[in-house]
Length: 444
Image 1 (cartoon, rainbow, N blue to C red):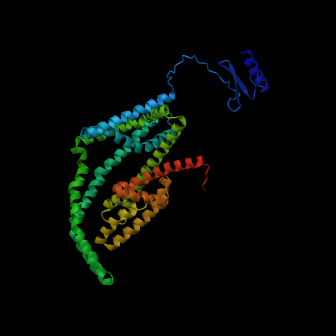
Image 2: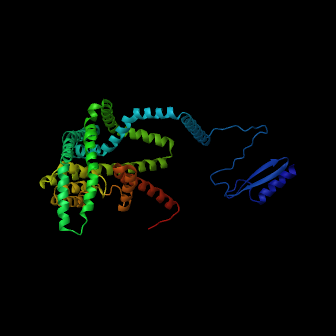
Image 3: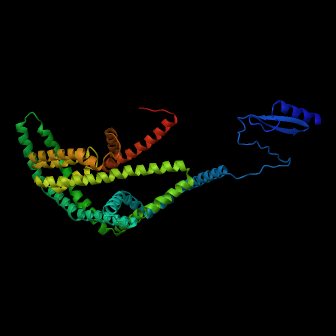
């Protein structure tokens, strides 16, 4: 036994490991009367750490020690099992589950509508509270500025709605009714004009155009009649005839006011939840991306709404100066269709040009030139001033968004397709840029 110990110490001395050296370290263990020298290289043991030799008794038994890793695994397992149970229950009880979801959606519908109202109005409130009341009027209290901004924004919007329902919509209804009543006279005038035009230009086949008009005229009259009899009265009387919808609208407006007023607290609580369960670096990135996506979406919708309203008002003023009939009806069509980028003004011009062709070709030409000038003004001056580069999309992607949105969502889809594509493009750019940085690739 002593001889073995002496040999071990002699071996350690030869290796210059008789203590704790700076470069290498040695641990001497005794196993059944033999000496075992373990050399730990510098790479294995850092300079600021010491190797600990844990000696456990022979009767030691393994015990479970809870760690963060096991807790995370347990949470994931619980979530997966809970989702599987809910999915299984939903499949087994599809009718009752569908009814339950429908009832729940009806209950929270005012909150969903209020969220969208607050989401759209919030930029207007922010501009009024910070720029007008805070910077211009020099009101120091933030809560007072916010309350005044909310009140002013909602008063403006309610006033616009009152004007729309008391003046614009009745005038539009009256114009449509007049068009339907005068449809026979308009058709005769259009027929006379086509005959005269065919006599002046015999090489053109005007009979084909006349046949198409005769075939489509009954459908147009039927559509206009149904629109006046069914759709317009429902729009005008919805808040009077259906008390539940009126109550939900008022409740949504009230909830949206509280959402905007408590925006900071809601944002703070949402951030606390995210930071509580997501690593800080990922939480910072997530919140930054969310804010940018919201800015892109609201910037486009609010900016385009303001732009289209101005274009509709200018169109009405110009048509009144030029003494073109049905000015309010055509201006509303031009303003609404102007919400669609690029193609909106031309889509809105088609009904007016066709209408004025039946009345007077000269008026149709004047209206077409006016719309062309108005579209150039909007595209080169007004649009860039209000919208700027809110979407960051090239014309190709804007056209793609309009085409796909129109195919799946109609006119409403054509409008929302552009901001949705802009948000998707922004997220894709972040994802691709991150992967390129990880791979140290730079593309110019």
